Length: 107
Image 1: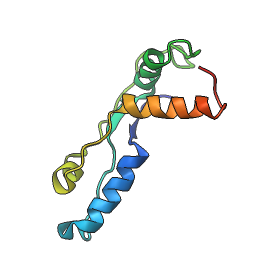
Image 2: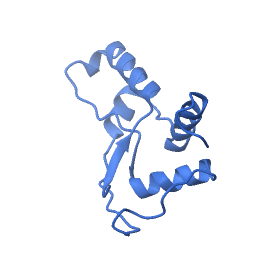
Image 3: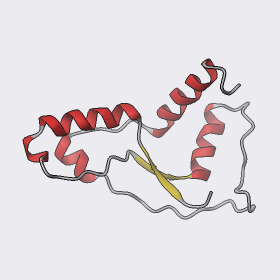
Image 4: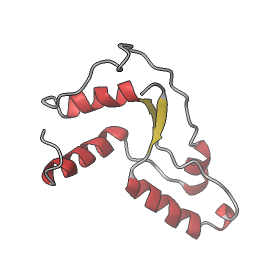
């Protein structure tokens, strides 16, 4: 799929909700709860390094090996709520391991 997307660990979303509820100045504010913005090619590259035996593509369906990346800014939520987001690589590893343990994928 061309383009990019914002990724966030579900535990970080829960933490952001709690912090927003506990921070009086957060009342009425809207926050971009996105840890990292990456292209799908970057994500599959991370997955290949985490799970080297997994059969993962090296290019898009149309053969392209580059994608545009629209950056989502999370400076407001980091500043106002003091949240530090889980690195995408750690989130992908946890999710892949959980899927493998449940038998939904084999790595």
